[in-house]
Amino acid sequence: MTGSRATASSSAAVVCAALLLGATACGSSSSGPTSAEAGKRMSQDARGLLGNLQQQLKAPAPYTVSQDSASAAGASGCGGGKERRSFAGQVQVPATPSVHAAMVLDSGSANGYLVQHGYSPDKHAAPEQSDARRTDVMVNEKAGTHITAVLTPAPGGSLLDYKVTGTTDCLRSSS
Image 1 (tube, rainbow, N blue to C red):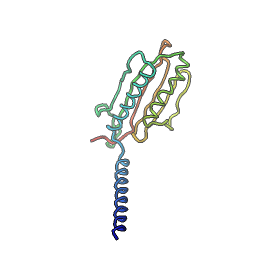
Image 2 (image 1 turned 60 degrees about the vertical axis):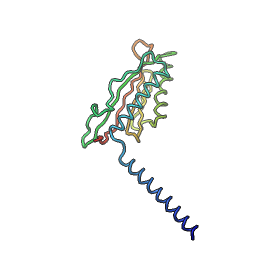
Image 3 (image 1 turned 30 degrees about the horizontal axis):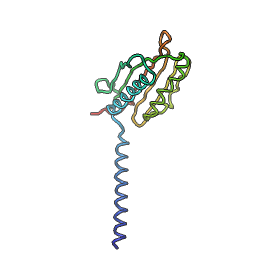
């Protein structure tokens, strides 16, 4: 009787633990991230990408950020208690050994970095791949973030411009 009672007790504990974990997982995934959480994640990912490009592609100058609405001050309203966050930055990298070769070789850098951070190609956007412009449009569905990396030759021909923009989905505000 002790053995069956222990087995029943162990089975009940496993079932309760599974139900508790399931309820916790379902509860957190159904609410999704807030705009503040997604904005912070997008900003970290975009800045990480720019820093990675700066280092890996040996940028002659630090990357710049022209817009980062990770904070509530820069959020734009979507209505219904929801808001969207945005990001814009850029880095210039050397066009070596040639503009064409660098465009082809360097364009995979953004995609590879973002895939490692939970992004996948956005199925609703067609990437542009030409000698004058390379575009990667990536999405992290779980985080509610979208990042686009555009690579173009800079005037003068010795550098390439990597422009990184991001937006979040329209998500519930934090308050």
